[in-house]
Amino acid sequence: MTENPHDPQQPEQPPYQPGQPHHTQPLAPYQQHPLPPVAYQRPLPAQPVPDRKQRRGAFAASVIAASLLVGAGAGVGGAAGWSALQDDSSSASSSPSSASPVVDTPAAQSGNGSVEQVAQNLLPSVVKIDVSGPGGAGSGSGFIVTSDGQIVTNNHVVELAGQSGELRVSFNDGTHAKATVVGTDPLTDTAVIQAEGVSGLTPVTIGSSDSLQVGQSVVAIGSPFGLDATVTTGIVSALKRPVNVGSDGQGNSTVYPAVQTDAAINPGNSGGPLVDMNGHVVGINASIQTSGQGQMGGEPGSIGLGFAIPIDEVMPVIEQLEKGETPTHARLGISVQNVVSGSGQQSPGAIVEDGARISDVSNGSAAEGAGLRNGDVITKIDDTLITDADSLVATIRSYRPGDQVTVTYTRDGDQKTVTLKLDSDASTTNS
Image 1 (tube, rainbow, N blue to C red):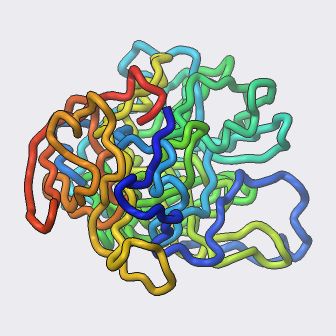
Image 2 (spheres, one colour):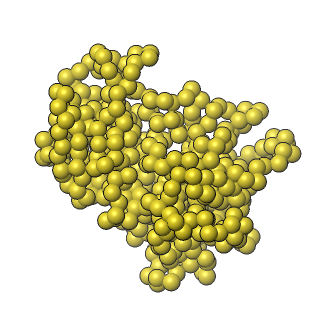
Image 3 (cartoon, one colour):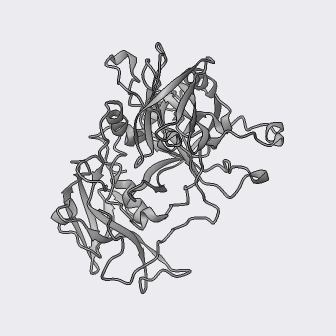
């Protein structure tokens, strides 16, 4: 059921959009119409969370987000300019040697390779994905995770195909293959596709986004504006950046604790890998913040603010998709909104306070069982500070169903804490 995001005991508020610039907008997959000649004459740039020790990538967690204010456009720093692709697979390989190995890379070991070495090693494992469907055509990127052609990408790329469209994968050696969707998860903007009739491919090595450090060098690989096998480089600009890129068909927010980078990411990069200097995948390039329309009215491009889905957060979802399962997400069981000082009414210049105010508690939820109430303001999950509604959603999504968390909140001016076990959305349409 869709829940009212407003606290019934307070005056109704319009959706609040913290820090969202006027020109932030979604990035669609690169549309395959001809670019203005000037676009080809100019050279493209040649360069540039909660405790997760007990789980491998828990991005698939979510607060009940149906019609949340946080899901109604409260994009942190905007990051709503986005593009995505997702791959699917009809079957997962049972051979360990044919799947992407998973390694834990301590931060101290980062930076061992050069950009040239990373590119040479990774380019054979990165693909361009062309999509066509009733709504048009476009292209994005993806990376190979099994030797028989299973590929990971973003959901927002493959959804362009709809139910009757087509996917075509282009490999680095110049060969091509049709592909089918194995599974998609709009809530985490991920997808898995299966290239048909291929074998002997080179899977990527999955690294650890939890080991990343701000200032660390990273490389992005993909097909910006349809230009396949493009390599750009930069640094990790920030970690755990709450990024809100919209919502799914049921009103659940797509918010994730992103890896922010200044490596050039543009339309068509969606679904491609962000890798460390060991060549290990640490994120899925998914969104950018823009300052407005591109030159000559074209699609917006990179301004040095790119965002990748942390690989540790999304691997559980990818593994479920590979098996043909419906992805599950952790669930606190509340609707939340940003905290506005004063009368509670949104107004120009209103001061926004830290925390996420509970506006609805679902019956039978973990939150209800822990005694949380409407009007409580959540300020911390474990050791992660909660600054606003997006921050809470992104943080909860870094956990898995059944994980135990400590919630710090204020009620009537008093600070309280409670420990609870997160629910699963497996039996509900809301998360």
